Length: 361
Ligand SMILES: [Fe+2]
Image (cartoon, rainbow, N blue to C red; front, side, top):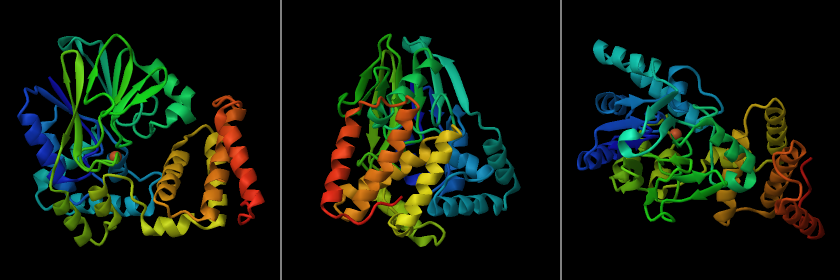
């Protein structure tokens, strides 16, 4: 049987708990989908543990950032990345220094294996997506907001694909559809249908469950596992390190995306939103990525859910989503008769009638 782990994020407490849990099952191989480092307080220790225990480990965007350069990171993530790099660079034990850098420098971006011994077809492993293995996010709401993106990903593997990166566990089907582990009662029964399975995050879950997440592949099924760990110990370590912003500790307790204060300041200014939309248009038209939209829309959603959004911010959210959805519709990615547009038009109309602070274009 296989254990698949991902997104450890330098959290030794979570990784130790998961490895102990794995040891209690009959696991023959551990596959790590990347992001061993970044965000958390123990990059050295986590690298050593993964090097010792994982049969295969892939390159995540944070591993890439520590090794080369961060791309599209927020300030907190970037500071954490440079801090992690310093931890590796200041190691005095030469053997450990070399082993860790060699490991990071030779991580593959994709791994394939036969699933024959567990009664499955070919298995593909990536950090992000089978199209952009290091960086592309696949979020549950892509099923509604970007269905062609999800279905397009299924052309790139023949039976099962395992990914991490979003820190949200669950199963995507080609329909497209998404099922959370709780909807599946913890077990996905594998059939001949293709499935893209997100294994969740060991060291920084974001599905409102603060327990470490991983999966076990057993004959005919994929089992989602949650393991409680001492997140308070990890949080204390984060709080004690100046270069790791406190929100990186707070979100461990919450098990979700917590907005750092500096981003809160940044996002609520209309002129920043305008710049943001420009950059999204640019990204979109040069065909690069929808990642900024997903991340930023995610932040806005959390803010609105927390009941903290002012009418101005709500207005910005709508404008922001509207612009991107229309851009996607122009390109055929989202059908123009999608109910989203009718709802948006109604909402924007309501905002105008109620003299919401001005639009941002
Ligand atoms: Fe990650």
